[in-house]
Image 1 (tube, rainbow, N blue to C red):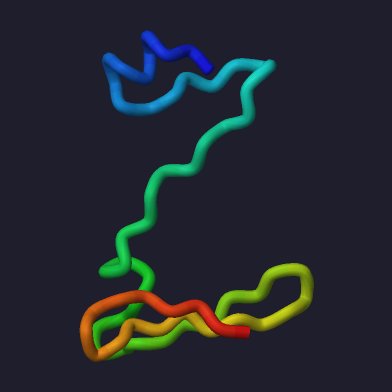
Image 2: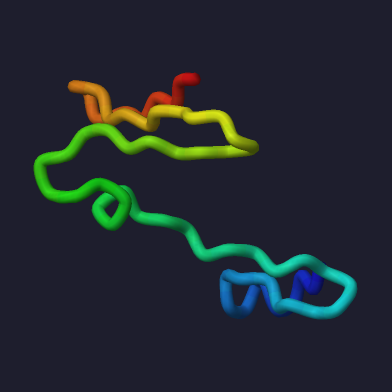
Length: 61
C-alpha cells in the first residue's frame, strides 16, 4: 500500500497491484428512517444487521 498517499489523504490510492478499498458506509444511509434492521445476502446466505437499543450493531445469521 502507498503509505504516503494514505497519510496525506486518509485513503489508499488504487493501483493495479493493490485492490480498491470501498468507502465507509454510514448507518444513516443503510437504515431507512425508523428502521432498525436490514437483511444482507452473502454467498446465498441471509444475515440480519440490527441496531440494538444501546445503539450497537449486531450481525446474525
